[in-house]
Amino acid sequence: MTQIRRHTAFLTLITLVVDGLILYASMVAAFWISFFSPLTEIFPVTKGIPPLAAYQQAYPVILAVFLVVFKSFHLYRRKTYYSSSWHFFTIVKAVTVALFSLMALTFLYREDFTYSRRMLAYSWLFSIILFTVSRRVLDKLETQVWKRNKKFRQIILLGGGEIARRLADNFSSNPRWGAEVAGILRLNGEEDPAESYPIPVLGTVDEFEEIIRRIPVDEAIITRLDLPHRRGMEIILTCEKNLVAVRLVPDVFSILTSQVEVVNLDGVPLVGLQTLPLHSAWNRFMKRAFDLVGASLGLILTAPVLLLCAAAVKLTSRGPVFYRQERLGENGKRFKLYKLRTMPVDTEKSSGPVLPCRDDPRATPVGKLLRRFSLDELPQLWNVIRGDMSLVGPRPERPVFVERFKESIPRYMSRHQVKSGLTGWAQVNGLRGDTSIRMRVKYDLYYLENWSLFLDLKIILLTLFSRRVHQISSRILPLR
Image 1 (cartoon, rainbow, N blue to C red):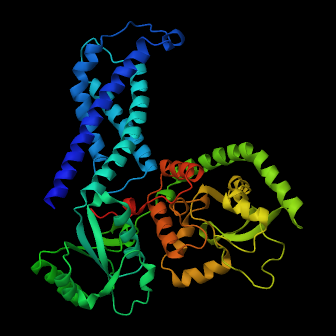
Image 2 (cartoon, rainbow, N blue to C red; image 1 turned 120 degrees about the horizontal axis):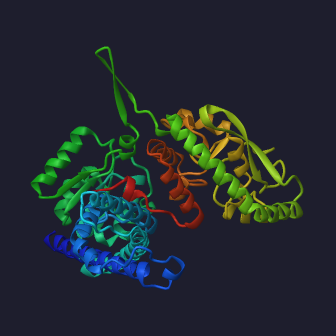
């Protein structure tokens, strides 16, 4: 453990030094671009060239502000894996907040000297680029350091299921945790086949004491809430006696989606679910304006692609180009969703409604191609303009499946408190097609309770430019 702490401290120190150098380099580069580069012929300097020394004198204050802001945005956390997209968006926010904070501090500065706004803009741009690149380079170097270290803590997972699989994958793919999962102990009655886990199944939870005597274990993680309370306490006491650290994975999604507010009504406190951000009239107006602009631009830009796809559908299979299907949207209201047809006409006439799957064999050759790149969804931009849908939100489902899911999945209908979307928080995290409906609901509820225009923009960019599964477990399911 001491070795791991030393590695963590050393890597954090390296990151701090690199950030300091990048900040200084950004300042010097912005100074040169602003006052000495060929760009000054296009944007001439009218108020004279300030001395670089004035900015160098302010550098310690600039550095201190940046370090404080970066720490508050968790940019110095070592153990958790953060994707490239998370780093980019977080650095943009952190640099913007830091520079606005510095601008506010300049109001306290009463000398005749005025800091250049042009240089501030260049510094903002250079900082974001250099910090983003450096974080990815340091991330790769750090991963190699942890791989060479090989002094991993041994962890055992108590309880199987989806959470155990996700944790095992996370530990194996992220060496910076400094941990290795020795195996899983399943609860009695769990029926998952042993081969479905990426690590060995060592036995059952009832054999815990015997197993930690045979295998050196540094930490135990209880992954299942349905472990009997008495048994859970026995395990915790056993871990304490054997100097084994113990952690519990609570139902984090339930915690995230149980935000409450207390209203005092004439001295009587009433507890209820907190109002969602999109219940605000102003937020709904902003989102609708964003949808109209985005969908209109989307239709204009994708019109040639849409025409080519429509022609391909028409020429390769009999039937209409567009397919209309009834879906449930906001407040359970039914609407007709438009798609490019990807299957033969009357596909479900004999089978009845069937949930889509990743490689649906019913799709036509052209349909498979359209579905692979989600091009069949482009006509839904018209649904957005009509007001049936939003650019971002929970994906709409067919009424027959809504009736089934609302009876078996808690809070499923809460997804219908806002407009359905072309894409959503669940989809950019790999939950599409025949993936878990329960997991999709949890991500949808997270989106509802944490909505912002910035989050909408982030989801759209991830939809457009990221085809791989985003590892969100580190953002929503952190173990720190």
